[in-house]
Image 1 (cartoon, rainbow, N blue to C red):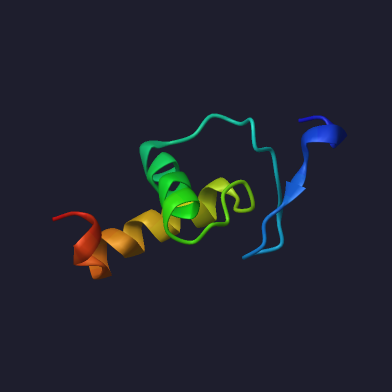
Image 2 (image 1 turned 90 degrees about the vertical axis):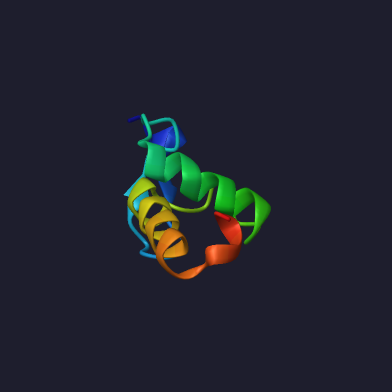
Length: 64
C-alpha cells in the first residue's frame, strides 16, 4: 500500500487501500454504496462487507 492510494473510511475512520482485493461481500457492499447510498469509494472493505451482510438480513427489497 503506497501513501498515494491510502484512503480513510467514512464510517470507521480507518485507513484502507481501495485497490486491495475484495471479497464477494465487499463487492456487494460496493454495489450498494454506488447504487443506494452514493458513497462508493469512501468505505473500507470491512464496512462494505458489513453493509452487504446487514442488507441481506434486513432489507428484503434488495434480494427478492
